[in-house]
Length: 278
Picture 1 (cartoon, rainbow, N blue to C red):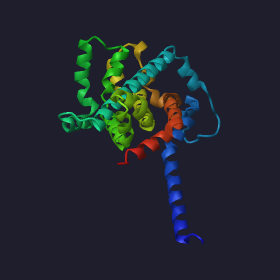
Picture 2 (picture 1 turned 90 degrees about the vertical axis):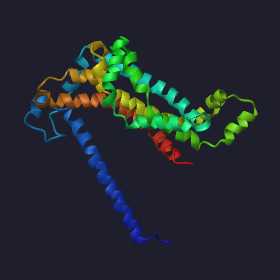
Picture 3 (picture 1 turned 180 degrees about the vertical axis):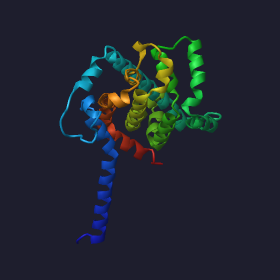
């Protein structure tokens, strides 16, 4: 039996609209990527020709020629991986506690954690700065990592995902005298890999692109993260005299995140679908 012509037409219109929106969404990315291969002198007078000569790799050579750029990359990797690892540990334990255990004031504590979502980071910058200054931790990896470990969204995500896992699996393990920690490590944690991957990607992305807190905490060039270091290399007239260089910086800093997302995008879809199950 042939499909309804009206339905087929509707599907084609929806597909066409999705393609148009996708092109509009990616147009700025394409524009940035194309301009990053253009000579800065050429862009002083031309910004409308993207895919025609001249092309150059000078903008990327200038980035790699900065003496401290590889140290900044190492700093960004250490900070991003550190935040991601410890956030996953803390949020997984807290999420499992909220999802599977009972303790006095549980609802109030969970509500307090969620209230953290409503607090903008700008509101706590000054207290954080004073606290880490008193501890003499500025310009250290600890100062760049610790303030970001408070992740209410991560606790909420893991709590909802653990709630979606059937309790029968744990009850069978409890009958075999397995401890809560063993159940969490051997059974629950492997089942939560999609949510772990999603939270890990979001955390890594946020840590890699973070600019405000490193700007405040890292005052020594050797402790700069990549985003802060690249921003420090921009001159006052970069917008008019170094457009290609600015675009290459954006591509250089964003490429690791793009590659990471390509490898783990299926986990994001799975985790989002899993959190809706009750």
